[in-house]
Amino acid sequence: MAEVREIIAAELKLTKVEPWKRLKGGCSSNNWAFKTEIGEIFAKIDSDKHGRDLLLGEMKSLEMLQSSESVRVPRPIKIIFSQNTAILITEYIKFKGLEVFQGELGQHLAMLHLRNLQLLKENADQAVKQFGFYVNTCCGKIPVDNQWNEDWIRLKPQVEMAAKMSGNREVETLWSRLEPKIKQLFHGVNVQPSLLHGDLWSGNAGETETGPVIFDPASFYGHHEFDLAITRMFGGFGREFYKRYHQLIPREVGFEERKSLYELFHYLNHWNHFGGAYEEQSLKIMRRLVANS
Image (tube, rainbow, N blue to C red; front, side, top):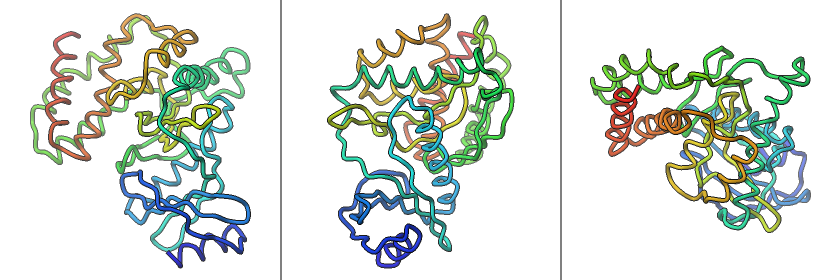
């Protein structure tokens, strides 16, 4: 820890970097809050083989989310690379679980999703016109290829990883039947790129005394419905959250089936991280989508 303190002090030109408390969170990161002469800061320290991509992606995600002026995120300060270690520095925010500001977060998330869609209509030169992101990110510990393209469906790499790591042949068979049918789920829907959080489960959302805050993003420009899928998987988001969101972005025809498609990304990602029950949950969704398409 002394070495990390010295690195942070040198990079931020600080004389005081005192460890305050260790914080939980992250798949592989070592998280600390420090007291400094510029206030309390948060440091996410990662020496994992994908740590550089993970924290570089998170840094750019925070920058883009903050610049949207739609939803509060921890203010990114700097990312530091030292030998095999990456350190992401942000402001420290004291928060608790999301309770009182459910509706406000739903509204703010919709405003985030609408921002680029409005630019496409009103000032297209400043809008993002493709799907992808400026850098690769990590959803959990798994890198996500964010090359700019015309396709917002991000399932194939997760399917291929699940098949390779588990040896499960059914997932390949189901994917060969599902992939040609996916576009049917978007019949009549004009999908345009929105800036997304990318991993918005309840553990990545909270609130201060004045409003909601989201963190640990893995952002990209994709279909706005993608962000809603994981909010329903593990609970923590209430009726008011969805009510306020859909007041600004109403559900379109086929929303429920597409929700299952986007949930599949996260179930596959969890299968690739943790195995176990997520394997059968992933296959169950794929079987249902194949049968209903």
